[in-house]
Amino acid sequence: MSSERITTLPVPAAAAPSLAGLRQLARAVARRLVPWLVPLALVVAWQVASSAGWLSARVLPAPLDVLRSAWELTLSGELWEHLKISAGRALLGLAIGGGAGLLLGLLTGSVRFLETLLDSTVQMVRNVPALALIPLVILWFGIEETAKIFLISVSVFFPIYLNTFHGIRNVDPQLVEMGRSYGLTRWQLYREVILPGAMSSILVGLRFSLGLMWVILIVAETISAQSGIGYLTMNAREFLRTDVVLVGILLYALLGKLADVFARALERGWLRWHPGYQEKGA
Amino acid sequence: MSEATSTHPGVRLQARALGKRYGQREVLRQLQLSIEPGQFVAIVGRSGCGKSTLLRLVAGLESASEGQLLADGQPIDGLRDEARIMFQEARLLPWRRVLDNVTLGLPRESRARGAQVLAQVGLAEREGEWPARLSGGQRQRVALARALVHEPRLLLLDEPLGALDALTRIEMHRLIESLWQRHRFTALLVTHDVQEAVALADRVILIEDGRIALDEAITLARPRSQGDPAFAALEKRILDRVLQKPDAAPAAGAPWLEPAAHALRWAI
Image 1 (spheres, one colour):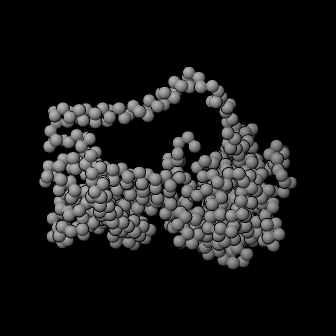
Image 2 (spheres, chains in turn red, orange):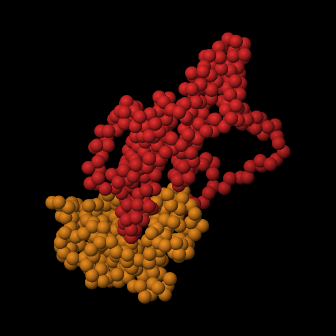
Image 3 (cartoon, chains in turn blue, cyan):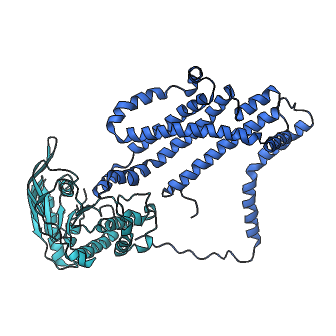
């Protein structure tokens, strides 16, 4: 059997730090640093242009000013307050819309009758862009919290629904047959075979949803809000505080990045078994 | 485990006028068969002769259209705990580690027994591995362990070695034979490989057009060696019989077939 590994000769790695070794180290460090050179140069050029007065603060404030106002907002507690409110809205919308999408996807994926009953309706509604609903949503819910959370829920619902449904449908029927013939109960079959089999697809849906979630949140908060990052930036615009506007934009970017890191962590955790998601060099 | 198996003889199987059809196509017809407890029976035949269908009927994965199929005198009407099937593919859950695959559906207390059975198939030290990291032969050994951990009284093997290379296959033959001798379950092996059938079985059954066309007892002493002339003669006789049917005139006596006939591992 092919279990024997080819034994490689031990490489004398610990032998005195040779010149070649140092050169290799330098090359590795350079590989890490090189991608940062261009962004760094841009920021420096931007700062220089602002300080020299070539770039009006009304167009773009200097990076240092942005940092300073971020610091001030942090100290006054405003930043944290608005960040909390925005993230709260996003997560509540994701929980409601994503939860509903997951549940409905699991149901239509597993029960043939529910698919015939519901799937074509969902597919029709899916083609309505969530943002097209804004006038209607304002009529229904006004411009309060409910409207924002409704918009986010609607938009994250579909990616999760579609991918869950698809994932369940694509579970290997041979594994299901094996599970049945090995005496798994319906619930065990679901937990051991069907759900893990659909998981990679469900997580793809989640990542799509996370992307959409921030876009819709930004739009919803920009239309009208009394709190949140969108309010912070719109309010700052009134007073021509472009530095605060920029802080808001960077906060959105940061939140988006965090959501992506979170989704990747889920993939690494739940899809550990998958050769495509395993850590390299293990 | 050995004291449990001694009170655990294999299942007695009987088929009476068994028939199975899919729409208009009749796969099995009027099949009569009786298998003693603890017997190792190999079913050979060309692709589409109905041998896998028979196995699926015995497993309870499908139900018969006509006739009766009895296990210990009771009609088979669905999946049963006493029967375990090993498929052509290993069908391991890729998201469960090896030992969790072996103890699939069993309570946590059975992990120790699962580890024991894994040791019997020679994979004790791989119990924490993901299935994706195993070779094809190792995966089938895990699948064998998964079947045996249930202490089945009937083991159904649906061409489980078809996709393995020749050396691994011979290793698996020895392993399956020794585990069968130890646990004394009834074994039903479907294969297209006559050599495999002769190496393992007490009895080789040829199915042709949905009926039993040949029922040959193999009385060679175990362990069997493929170099043995009696083995080779028996294998050739069965193989000739298998090849004879569709083009009855030339096959048996075809001069070009003669020298290679017993070495030929025909796979359709």
